[in-house]
Structures are given as C-alpha cells and as structure tokens.
Amino acid sequence: MINKMSLAVAVAALLAAGGCTSADKAPPPVDAAGATAAYTRLVEAADGTRDQRIRDEKLVWAELNQSILACMRKAGLDYTVPPFVMTAGGPSDPGDLTSVLPLGLPDFGIAENRESMARATTAGVVPARLTGADEKSGYDDAVDTCTAAAPARDDWDPDGAGELLGKIVDIFSAIEQQPAVQAKLKAYGSCLNQAGYQATTAAALRDTIYAKLPTADVPWATLSASPEWRQAVDYERRAAADDTRCRTDLHDTVMLIGAPQVQKLTADSAATLATIAEQRTARDAVPIPAVGGGHTAAPGRSARGRRRPGPLRRAGAGRSRWPRRRPG
Image 1 (cartoon, rainbow, N blue to C red):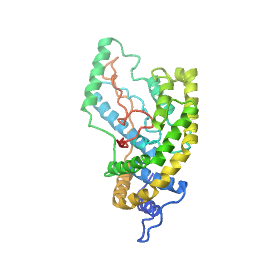
Image 2 (cartoon, rainbow, N blue to C red):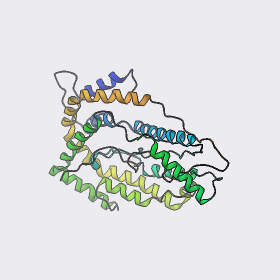
Image 3 (cartoon, rainbow, N blue to C red):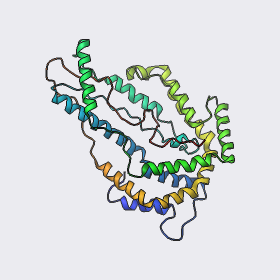
Image 4 (spheres, rainbow, N blue to C red):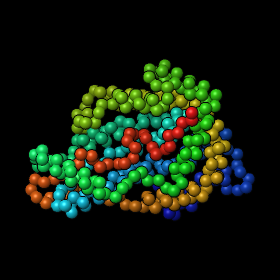
C-alpha cells in the first residue's frame, strides 16, 4: 500500500522502470519476465493491487451499511448488518483478453468468492425473534427505504484511471489481432480442449468453473462438506494449472510485443500516474467504518433487507473495473 512518504518514490520507480527518467530513454525489456513486470507495475498503478481493490470493496460495503444502520435507528428499528461478501479477490480480466492474465495462479478466486457468499448465507440477516409474514414484510420495506435513501456509492476510481486502463486494453486488443498471436490463441484453445475443457479462451475456462461450483444458498458447513464442493475446488485448481501450462507461450509473446508500447504509455502518463497515486494514498487513509447490529425500539422488532446491501462492484470473483472492449 502506498503511503505519503513513499508516494514520490513509488511514482519515480514506476517511471524509472519504464526508462523515463532522462532524455536517453532505456530500451524496452528484452525478456518476458521484464516485460511482464513493467506491465504489472503499470496495471497495478492504475487499477490498484489485489489488497487495495478488496479494501475499496469493504469500504463501500461498510459506508453503505453505516448509512442504512443510522436510518433504521432514526426510525426506531433494529438492523442486522449482512456479512461482507468479497468479489474482488480474483485476477483482473482486462477487456476479457486471454493473453494478459497473470500466469502461475493457484486458482482464479472463484471458489473463494462462493465461500464468502455461503458464509454470508450461514450468518443470515434475520434474527430468530422476528415472527410473522406481515412483520417481516414491513421490515423488508423499511430496509429498502433506508437503502434507497443512502448516499449513492459506486466503484471508486482515481481521476484518469479509467482512461489509462482503456488505453492498455486498446494496446493488447490490437496485439491479439496480429496473425502470429491469433495462431497462439488458437493453440491455447486446442491445448485446453486436449486437457478436457470445453473452452478456448480464459474467460470461457472460468465460466466452466462457475458452472461446476454448487450455489451458495446453503450454510457454509453444508456446502463445504459436500462432494460437489470439493470436486469443484479441485477442478478450479487444476484448471488454473492447465491454464498456465497452455498459455505461457502466448502470454510471454504478447508481453514482449507490447513492451515498447507499455513503456511509452508509462512515460506519456507520468502526470496521470502521479495523480492516481496521490488519490489512492488518500483513499487508503480513509478508515473502514465499524458497523454492527442496531438497537431495538420494541420487543420482537428487527430488520431484514430483501437486497443484502453489499459491494457494488460488478458481481463475480475475478471481475474488475476494466473496460471490456474487443475489436470487431
């Protein structure tokens, strides 16, 4: 996490790594590891690290539920805050591009997201003392009203981050259309098929994992003990390993082709990157509010929302705020 003391150092290091600290620009990386490192630095500077994205999600969830809790208390009602459900734990999927996803992942964060949802189901939001369909419906309506009255909260992005991410997607979307890269994309799909997957892209491979996982509408203890769950978790881990095995050549080739453009974009975006880093530093300094159960105005009264107020990021593990633009 970037702090105020390291802000200038972090930006300078990013630009220096791109060869952008003097008039004599360093050449772009000539090996896949160096090219991947330069790409990752730029992506994480614009979109945040995994930890930062999860923290952003928690902050949105906490602030929203804090508003609902205050509204319910004002109305003299009790509100049980629903558990946090993480959806930002998986890898970014820039533009749904197969070639640029990180290699060597132990999994895609999909089972992790499903587990989070199941634990939330286990905790529930309905106190046992709540009785009667009319009473439940009345409190549903109260929570809905307070949710609607809460200040609008959406995914947070620093100024210029979305445009910078769009430029990265444009660069690698064009690279994926090159004939040599198209051939490697086809080889990746064939490799997946030979390994037994009904998928030819990384996004389609992740979709097969979603299809394997049981739904999270049962308590976590029940879900985690089921053979279907264990089989699905093993399937995701195996799919991640096969993805790396099948995609390494494609990924490294694309990273090397894109290295000069990544270096140029890093240099051209120096001012934007400094602004993003400054705003992210301020964002990281915002404390996550502590939220918990409210007070009870009358015996047997509590609250339950039809829509559990949770993260407003696009649903689904591994889904990020990247633009999803594919050529043609």
